[in-house]
Amino acid sequence: MTESVQVLRGGRARTYVIAEEHEDGSLLLAPEPVPVVPHDAGPADDRRAAPVAISEGAAILEVRDLTVAYGPRRAVDSISFDIRRGEIFGLLGPNGAGKTSTLSAIEGLVKPRAGTILLDGIDSRRHPNAARARMGVQLQATSFQSELKIREIVRLYAGLYGVELSGEQITEGLRVIGLEGEAHKPFKQLSGGQQQRLSLFIAIVHDPALLLLDEPTAGLDPQSRRQLWSRIENIRQEGGSILLTTHSMEEAQAVCDRVAIIDNGTLLTTETPRDLIDKHKDDPRVREVAHGNVTLEDVFIGLTGSEIRD
Image 1 (cartoon, one colour):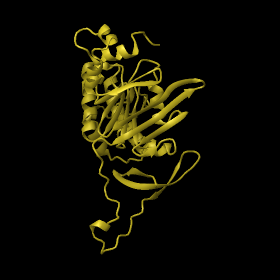
Image 2 (cartoon, rainbow, N blue to C red):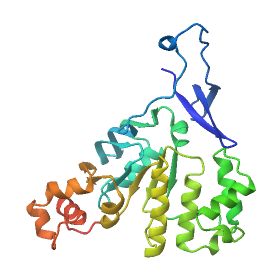
Image 3 (cartoon, rainbow, N blue to C red):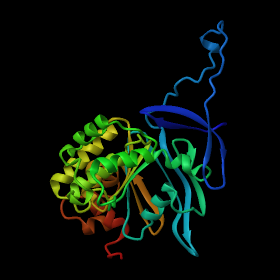
Image 4 (cartoon, helix red, strand yellow):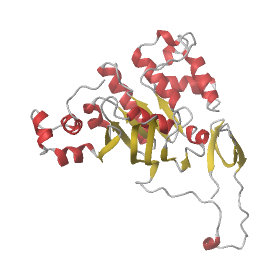
């Protein structure tokens, strides 16, 4: 089966087939051919590429038997999970549990020792550039060029994604995230919350199939945190899918549709926050650390231990 990718140009999505992939990871794309259909063919014989009906539970990301190792040490040991379309999925774990290595493998920053990663149907190990073009990433700490003005940063990074934005589109985008009045300020003059909102805007400027958020609200005040999550929820309502890492169990319980808990490179469980609490609320390890009603944090500590990790 021929793999295809969508490329955004001038605000329009065009479909191309992957004709060749070179050793350096670059791709040779060709326009997707349109089949010729006989005029007398009835509906049953229509072989044109019709829109694909995606079921509500269809996965945008499939991770199967993923193993990441650094020398003899396995940071991630044969884990498997999937993220559904339109889902906010939380990847939770203590420090050193394997979260960063898992994210790095999905982003294509480290080469897995084994396993398969499919992003929107694209094998990220076989076609890393095509997979990366389908994801957006917002890191915990954002380091845009400090002297560049906000409008310049937006135009620069949109161009890197192959998206051409007019001045009016940039102004409107900044208005939506509450930064229209800061458009001509250098990045270094933005507050932490403003920097995170800008980072999120740039991460989705190319309309990615999957958005990866690494501790997106760390260090933000409650108002900035609520505002950021309101924007993220809007992304989900517009059909976006989100993979989130956070150390805030309260946040994960409030915003995630499902969570996976990883520890020592092994996936312990994948459930909705509510189901996870119901499943483990009577576990002695959880009852020991709970104070009143059992929370996701109580379950997390019960399953991973109360020892402080470096």
